[in-house]
Amino acid sequence: MKIIRISIILSSILLSSAVSATEVNQEQMLQESRQAIQQFAKHLKGELKAAMKKGGPVNAIQVCNEKAMDITASESQKSSVTLSRTSLKTRNPENTPEAWEKTVLQQFEERKSKGEALKKMEFSEIVEVKGKKQFRYMKAMGISQACLHCHGEKALPDVSAELNKLYPDDKATGYKKGDLRGAIVLIKDLN
Image 1 (cartoon, rainbow, N blue to C red):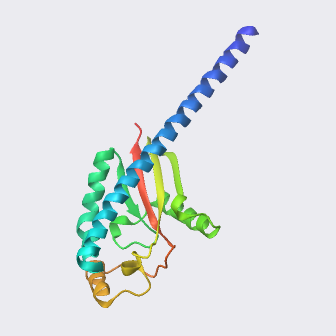
Image 2 (image 1 turned 180 degrees about the vertical axis):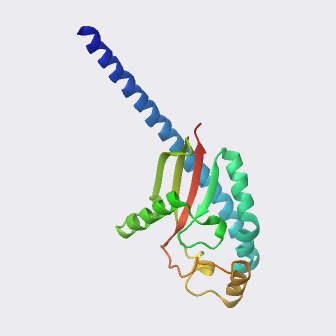
Image 3 (image 1 turned 45 degrees about the vertical axis):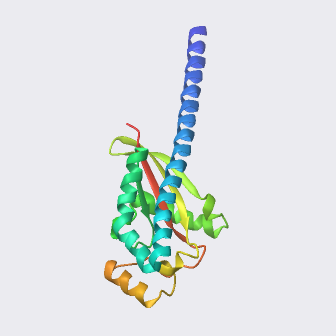
């Protein structure tokens, strides 16, 4: 009887230790994810701001069209993760959300409608895909005043012409300041 009881207690202690270690590890991954996304967003925003200053919104569109994917790949490699951007209303078809991302984006919309601030909105979890575990993290992106030049309800004629030329199936317009634009996604393979 005592041996069984001791075995159960030891199993319980070991299980508690494993859960705590997983929680600590997940918290560390969350912190690293926040840093990687912050660095990525800073890099991309810096390029966009410089382009806007140099040649206005049409010039900024060129950054999104020609440099954004390279910046994404570069920042992914630096952080040893996979970064991407996605939205329920995509401009670039390569950013179309997969099922998991779409679900989280819809949850973000619900959370926003209940008053949660976009700046603090995030979601993470460990999922299994094809037998492999991944840590997945999404950080909401909102529409600022500067975003409205290319994503707002009314764009200037030259901006509209450039968007139509580069993105004939563009769905990423009609936003108002403070709307949910989409999210930055980070995926880290765990095994």
